[in-house]
Image (cartoon, rainbow, N blue to C red; front, side):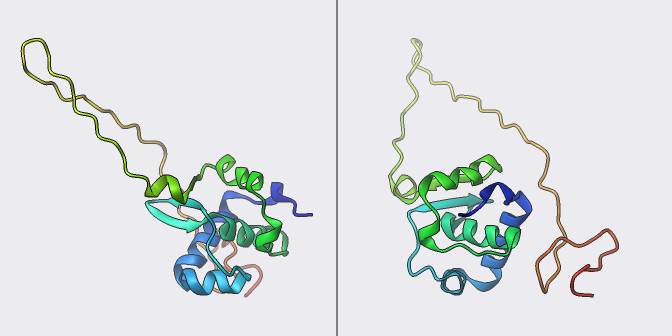
Length: 145
């Protein structure tokens, strides 16, 4: 039984980094995933297979990499609890409806003002290039050096 409570944000970011380095095909094949799932993790505008990322992150956290059958839909809640966005592929492929602003009584239209709030920037985490664990403040890996 997988213990998903041990998966941290750093484990997920490590999985994303490994996915980016290997590419989607080899990353999925290395975990034994035959096809991509319908659930996507969106991080910084890029799409990742949410189940494969969670399987790899669990492996980094516990040493036991999960298979596609081990991850059920409710287990993806761990990713959203860690602050990641998980959506269905069908939601992203659906065309968005555009609504036109209504004209004022005087015949002029006013553009809506949108404000964006910026949170704290994502911390830069230095990882060991060999084992992908977080490096100590000295910059040396405790496991590889």
